[in-house]
Image (tube, rainbow, N blue to C red; front, side, top):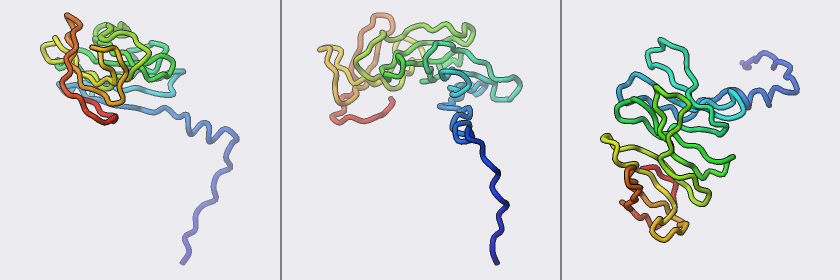
Length: 175
């Protein structure tokens, strides 16, 4: 017996474009207390912004960033009061990390300097908030770009950075 499929609908000239530009959710992360989920919503406007919603579905999603750049969730703060987020500069992938409190949406507190020469991956604040952990393909002691990304503990009060691991080979990883 043959499988009989219905005829395909006639597609508009814009069908493929429209299909490729459906809104997409990226990097969803649930808060440590399990009450919230945060994600980047792409193709809802000219750039991806971060949205949050309660995990019980009791409220509609709320946009909490509007930077003019694609903005992404790196991690939640351990007390679920906010996020570590990042964005680059017009797609150069040279990210800057920020803290974003849920009670102060759209207000980004810089955690790292604006920079244009190296890549940062990850971004997690220690539970008692003195340190930020991330990877960077940069040696801050010599101000040289590296092939591999080293794991750093960045003191948020003094600005000091301590290397925790120095992988020998380049790789995309997040501490």
